[in-house]
Amino acid sequence: MSRPQSVTVLGATGSIGVSTLDVLARHPERYRVHALTAHRSRETLLAQCRVHAPALAVLEREEDAAWLRERLGEAGLVTEVRCGPEALVEVSEASEVDVVMAAIVGAAGLLPTLAAVRAGKRVLLANKEALVMSGALFMDAVDRHGATLLPIDSEHNAIYQCLPVEHRGGLARHGVTQLLLTASGGPFRGWSAEALAGVTPEQACAHPNWSMGRKISVDSATLMNKGLELIEACWLFDARPSQIQVVVHPQSVIHSMAAYADGSVLAQLGNPDMRTPIAYGLSWPERLDAGVEALDLFQVARLDFEPADEAAFPCLRLAREAMEDGGTAPAVLNAANEVAVEAFLDGRLGFAGIGELVSRVREACPPEPATELVGILDADARARREAEVRLGRR
Ligand code: NAD
Ligand code: MG
Image (tube, rainbow, N blue to C red; front, side, top):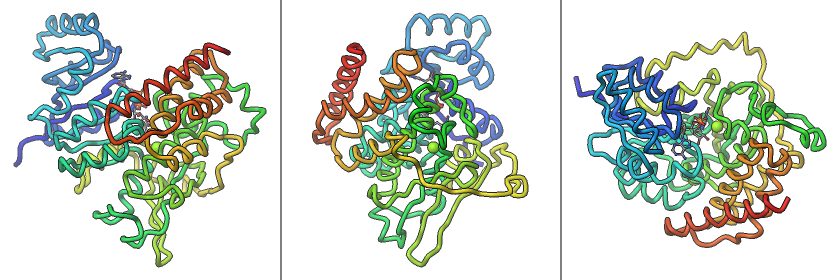
């Protein structure tokens, strides 16, 4: 039998990270953990190190790293602890690593994810913000360095499963006419703009179908998540925004679809459990037991579909426009949204203020070419400054 694959999990303590470790632990003969990383959650990382015994663990701050080193030493574990953004890059590109799960949330995941791509790894992409920011550069690096990119976002994973294995070079070449990107509609589906104005962070983070980190939960509630996913789909599948239709499907059983020229529509179905796309990404082109309950269609009983309400949820339109504008526009959109979501979660900005702030920052930061990483990082930094200035003025 071949040796186990060596896996780095970036963002191990988050929702996707924990689901990834669950799948890995079901198949110890196939996978071993090389490195686990977290931002500040040192207690959770310690518990994960005890179970998975990685060679390396990474935290952001040296004080947390020192704390973890001491605890691991007491427990007699040999895991080496490092800290800072360089360490994230190191554990992503290390020669002994085969697979990198990119599950850090937000722009902080860009550099380590790109490092994994440039090192030609199998990259399991959950961190959609990285691709939204750097689309052309990212996909170019995938091709140039022979990385294997597998989408973990459930919609993109579904589309990947519904497309031919070779699907790059434009959808039409493969007889595909449209991608149907399903959306649950979030916790406020059907709400009016007036009702949305008073929404609290707790309400926004209580998603009806999926249990996720707080940032993506807010993005799901504003539909910015669907907007970021539209941009993500354009890059992953060489699609134009006009070739992607967002379909609100409240049951979250169909995870997305591909429509073909002959009238066929292929869909991927399953219970809303991220372990399915994670297991698919890990084992592709094989299939693994993910620990996910079998889908019971009689219990689902019905599947509903409706259009998205772009008047009440402007973030979807803002994202589509950013993709159409191109260059650094998606990076600006993403950065402004990250600042806005954090301000909303801290009680400094109302729910409707998220789209407003993103729109203002987009106006203040006209798109520039996004061919170099430094230009993208500059655009990200400038958008964050513009967003903070506007927040301060309120
Ligand atoms: P989460 O908030 O639960 O976890 C985020 C992880 O990233 C944690 O381990 C955290 O410690 C780490 N992290 C946060 N900020 C960091 C920083 N500045 N530097 C280094 N590490 C940092 O988030 P999540 O729900 O697991 O989502 C992770 C990514 O996957 C996001 O990009 C999200 O959009 C995407 N995604 C999540 C889901 C889901 O079901 N949760 C589905 C699809 C896509
Ligand atoms: Mg998704």
